[in-house]
Structure formats: structure tokens, C-alpha cells
Length: 229
Image 1 (tube, rainbow, N blue to C red):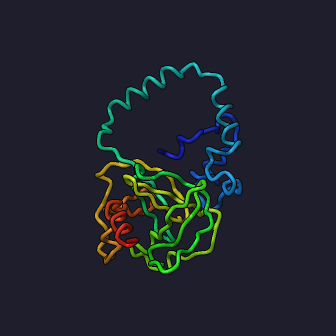
Image 2 (cartoon, rainbow, N blue to C red):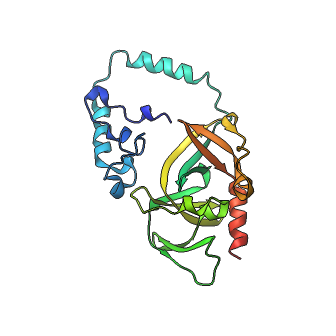
Image 3 (cartoon, rainbow, N blue to C red):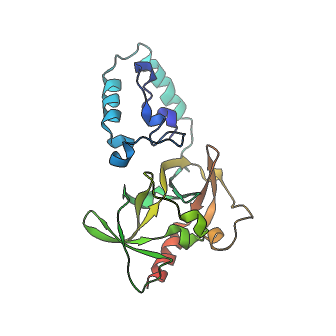
């Protein structure tokens, strides 16, 4: 979704911080409230702004403008549209199909498991009272270790993904959120990507000058299952 579509409150003389230093902001600066609320949707500032927008007077041209807008949407073919969940590991922006994302939580303590493949299995994490397997996406797909180790920051989150009845979690350096795209928007991986990283890549999606590696979730889960046997 276009970032300008998220609660544009300029007409009400509001400081739409969610589009500046919130989850839809383009700058490196991030709101301190995100550490507590994780997403702008959960923040009372965002909720108050939404109520003000809903309570505002309806312009005289509202009906006609929305009629024209809906008529325009009918002309758009969205039969092949897909959605992906974008996140960052180290310096690399990656994405899984949004359909396998189960939950996003604040980063929590990872409990090591002795005598297991430490390069794949990071340990166990407690998510809402249930222990989940925590893996390293960077190690599995072959991103260089120098890109996966960075100082802890307020952007870090724990992402839980599930396919069929199999569920694992992984730490992400930053969450970008869900994006929508057409299969035609995906380009082949660059020739410079070789080895396992290339094997897990379905292609590259470019959004707002950011290159996002689209990951093969089938191969990823297959590798995790085999690696944890």
C-alpha cells in the first residue's frame, strides 16, 4: 500500500508522525514509542488521529470523488496480485509470502540448545507461553556472517512463520511490513549472487529503490526440517 494512503492527516493540521518516524517513514530516525507499541496501529497517537479523521465533516465533493475512484479501481486487473512480508537481516532486505507469517513480537531471550547445529538452530524462544524453534535465516540462505551480526536496536523483532503444521521463529533486524506486487515485477537474481543464497532466491523485487530478495519458502522449510533431524 502506498505510504501516502496511511491516515493522511495534513488537512486536519496533524503531525502525521507515522509517515515520518513511524513504520511507514522513509528516514532512518524512528519513534521511541515503537519499542513499546511495535507498530503504529497499536499507538494511541495513531488511534486519536483516526478518530478525528472519521469525525470530520464530509466534503460536498466526497460522493463524486469516491464514485470516480471506485470506477477507476474496476479497470485494474488484480487477479495475479500477490503479497509479501518484507524484513531485513543484517544489510539484506528479504521477503517471504505474507501467507506464512503467523506473528510478529518483540525480540526475546533465545535459550540455547546444546549439541545441536548452532549455525541453523539459534535455540528456543518463549512466545506467549509456548516454546518455538528459533532459526537463523542468514545462516540458512548463506548471507555472509559480517552482514548478520549487528548491535541490538529498537528495530529488531521476532517473526514466527508457519507452513502446514510446522512452525519456526527467526530474529529480524527490522520489519518493513506487507507489500503488494505483480509477478511481472520480479526480476531474476543478479549474476553476482551464487551458492546457497541464489538457491533460495525466487528473484528480486524493487520497491522505492530497495532491492528485496524473494525467498523460496518451500526450500527454506525443507532445509529447516532436514537440519533439525
